[in-house]
Image (cartoon, rainbow, N blue to C red; front, side, top):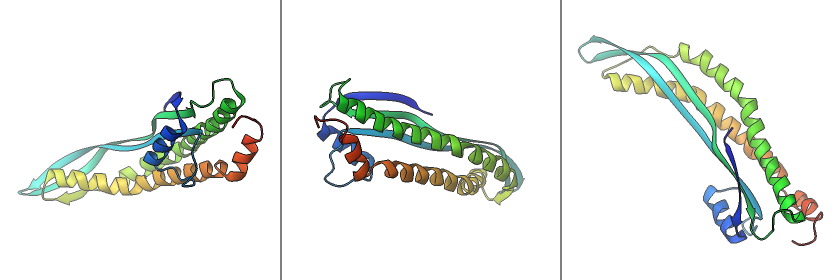
Length: 182
């Protein structure tokens, strides 16, 4: 689920640079007062069993597979322009916490289906026959990755859609109407 860290030592220009660095889809002239960045990670590890069948001929099968999906960190940035406890700070914090919840809920909802997919698909892949043990092992990894990575991408797309749903002009207007010192 990621280590959750709140940071409020950045001014709006610095938040804009962070936003541009992570390529969040927001209006080009929009300067953020808050930003949530989760480093989405996908990592597939495999162990293979290699059998030499003859000169320059190898067979490889998957012995074990492990996939990591999730976040190492979730960073919530709130503009230093607004002091903690102010109406504006609390409004930004509430908005960014919705993003945190989206990241975590969507991961939770997709994790089981990804785990089921790897348990179902990994045993069905292989054996692979190639001229080198490394190439055979890599081929197995590529085949399993081609089955699992699209599920991670689907999760990532769902996160983007849900975040975009709350990052709208109408929602920002509603949130800003609650405070007077923007």
